[in-house]
Every structure is written in C-alpha cells, then in structure tokens.
Image 1: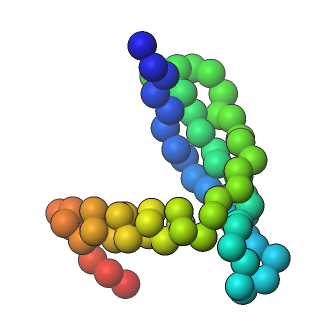
Image 2 (image 1 turned 180 degrees about the vertical axis):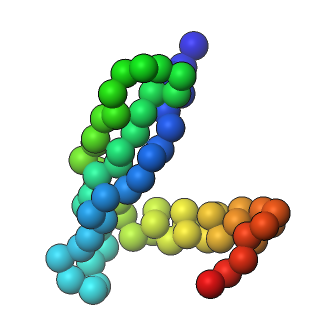
Image 3 (image 1 turned 90 degrees about the horizontal axis):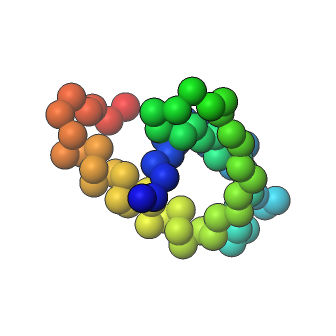
Length: 70
C-alpha cells in the first residue's frame, strides 16, 4: 500500500532571475492520518511543470463551488 501525504504549503519558491527555467523551494508535508511531525523537503521544479500545475489548478478551482477570482 502506498503512503499518502498531505501538502501543507510551498515555501520560498524562487528563481535567480525572471527568465529562469528552474525554481527552488521547500514543500512542507505531513503523512495523512499520522501523528508524526511535519516534514520539509527541498525541491527543484522546472518552469514547464509549474505552468502545467498552474493551468490544472486554475481549471480545478474555476469548477469548484464557492471559488471566486480576486
């Protein structure tokens, strides 16, 4: 059986310049249903992946009940 993790936040996702192709930050996660403490994982993410996540989350939130764009 695979483990299930809950994503709590993303911290400090940043690039060295505005044209960067890769970003670094920290995922703060917690094992679902566990009393274990929160863990922080250093990650690097390519711009293409962030663009894909942005589009996917935008569609998901647009369809969600009660979501309003700011």
